[in-house]
Image 1 (cartoon, rainbow, N blue to C red):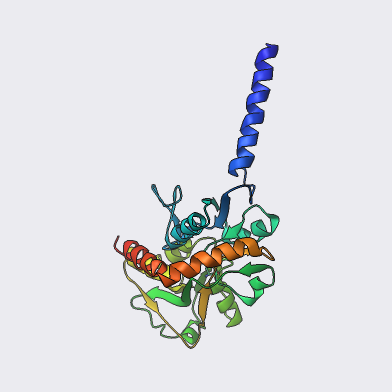
Image 2 (image 1 turned 90 degrees about the vertical axis):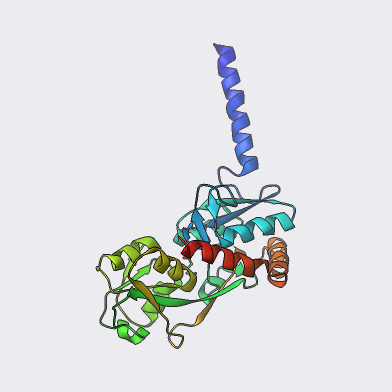
Length: 257
Ligand code: GLN
């Protein structure tokens, strides 16, 4: 009896040690793993699938994260969480970096450091095919849906419009499909994916109203060691066309369904 207890205690201790080493409890910065935080609800950049590039996670960002780790002789791990929690988790040290189609905004720059830009996007409007919305100002008297904490929410807020915020892009798009809202404001590549997946929707652009947005990877302020590794890998992937190829590959896959 006593022996069993002792064995159990030892086994537990070993499991706990293993957890710390592999970051399965979420400890970041251990050994040779880079733990990337993401919100896997943002195709074609990150989504959950049966057989992704990093475990169950796939998409442009996941392929980039994997390569960044490999270039640095390390392994990439992913922690999936709500978009709103990512920067807090980064500051707490629960994750080492955030790769989430995240726009490097001045406000976010106050709390974290960003890598080189790896993708440029813009906000667009998804509407029903027969919608009369042709410009951002046409949203004034419409029911607007956004995703909570995304730059799309900030844009609509800055325009002074009222809106409803959802936790997930798919939820906002379902409201539109079901006729409960008139327009969804969201990032361009993700909008393309949703329009490809749902009948009767189209994209309306307004370059005058929505500025271009630069996606970058966030690290803790002052973590130059990791930032240098990330930037070196991104520069290489931009120069040799890898990121372009990934964008084409995942955009085609995303809309071909
Ligand atoms: N680019 C947008 C932002 O930074 C949306 C990102 C996302 O949903 N993953 O807020």
